Image 1 (tube, one colour):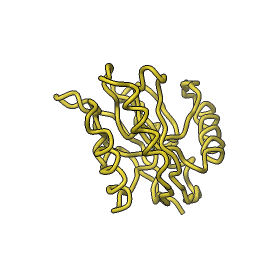
Image 2 (tube, one colour):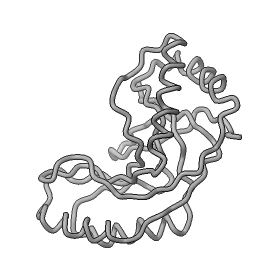
Image 3 (tube, helix red, strand yellow):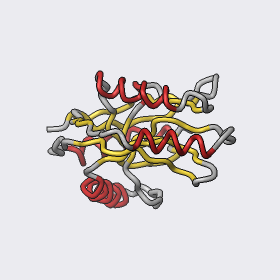
Image 4 (cartoon, rainbow, N blue to C red):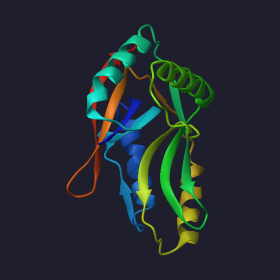
Length: 188
């Protein structure tokens, strides 16, 4: 079984591509696995492992819930790290509209529970995963110096998603993860 989640795919543009190229250059001496730009997304709701027989029910619930859902204007405004100061694990972008996304995610969570789905109760942190960091860095001090230099750059990337998508993660033969859209609803 693959993981299912609801999210907004990031539509890439020159600003996003150039920003990511700058990050890769600044952090090129570290073993970092960068997500392909076509995999970038903002998770709204994580279903977890899902029985393939339930996918149709999830898609119907998505369509029913999303009817009339309006597009939001997002601003990507910060670069963050999950993990510790000693062992950073994931580079991610934060969204200025975090509070609104949490409300939207909570409403969908409650709707899906009412539909009979057992939902994962993890704390929702709206973010776009950019890269996974190797388990052992050759110099955490150098990593944090470079990271802090990147953070000093003025970053404001506007983005308006046009669809909310039901996505399924798929692990490829080389260990990389890709995301397949299995359902999509156009936002108003």
